[in-house]
Amino acid sequence: MGNVVDYVKQYGDQDFSVRPFGEADVLVMAMLSYMSFDGLVPTPAEHKEAVTLARIDEIMDPAKVFENKMYVKRSQSLWNALRGTRRFWNMGCNFCRTRLEEEETMQFSAITFFPQGSLPVVVFRGTDETIVGWKEDFHLAFSRPVEAQRMSALYLTQVSSLIRGSYVICGHSKGGNLAVYSAIWADPFAREQVEAVFSLDGPGFLPELIEEKAYEEIRDRVHRILPTSSMVGMLLQNYESYEVVKSSAFGMMQHDGYSWQIEDGVFMRAEEIQSKRKRMDEVLNRWIFAMPEQERELFVDSLFGMIEKTGAATLTEFAADWKKNLRICAQHMRGLDSETRKRFRQILRMFLEIYRSVMETAVKQEFEELTKPAEK
Image (tube, rainbow, N blue to C red; front, side, top):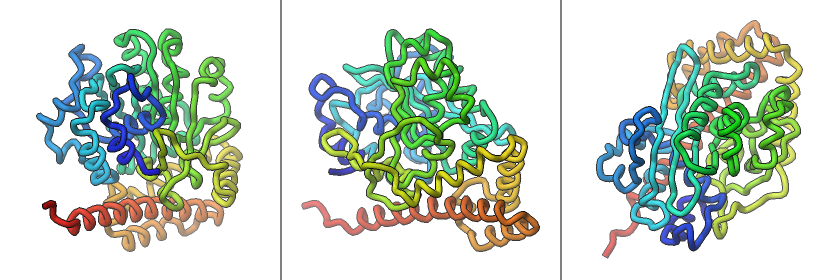
């Protein structure tokens, strides 16, 4: 039993004719999407040939490709494991599309992979460490569609016209939400081509979206996978079914796909979401659903307006001087009702927990790398 990097090391030399595409490969693609391939992989508008991971390795600037601070060390570990493998290294990459618009509260990135001997995989990137990305996640609770969702449907419609035959769609975190949304709202031809949709701990949807006829057409092809202590994936969870994967992490950090446990190419299943976490998620969802739409919007705008007062643009910046930033937030929480203050504190604690655990993992990996025995 290991994680996604261990899976690549163990099975990377087996091509897809030997070991068919499976859910561990979905996670590989989802984690790859957190790397920045802008300028290295053609956009949909360019109509160019796909480039392979091997070619990207030759021409890339590692500092730019691994610029996502939340995953930099683990992205490097995954890339090193992929290097030279028969299964992945000559996989084509195409149709890269990225946008970050702070004024419009929109963070969007998508890419399509073409593994040799398997179906193409359309991947939507999840939330990165930018505050605007997290704000957009919370916008899902009160507004549909958010701008990234609109872009996901447009992207899939465009890419489906460039792909021959069926394909898989996937994404981790917000990317999982975009994967499902794109399959619902892309044009009917694009929807017909979808073989399967994987949402890896992605937020759900407002109830009115689930009732759409188009969702019923793809429901049987949607696979939602959550860790045992899911908070992100349980956000806006209503009556959608899901499966639960075991994680080596604790609490909120189980959201990290690198912590998910894999054995023989299959996620290690758990029976259910942890009962305490599930009760907390249910309370949060009831609170969201009970609020009128305008109040939900006001809550999110107030929360992130407060965070923006600190001047931080990313979780790293917010946590770097967390005592000062929390004091600034505390000043702005005065005068709020007790329930709103309670939710603000819960979310701020979540942000700090994510950052702290990510940095602890990165430091541990760096320590192990620096102190490992020299090769003889």
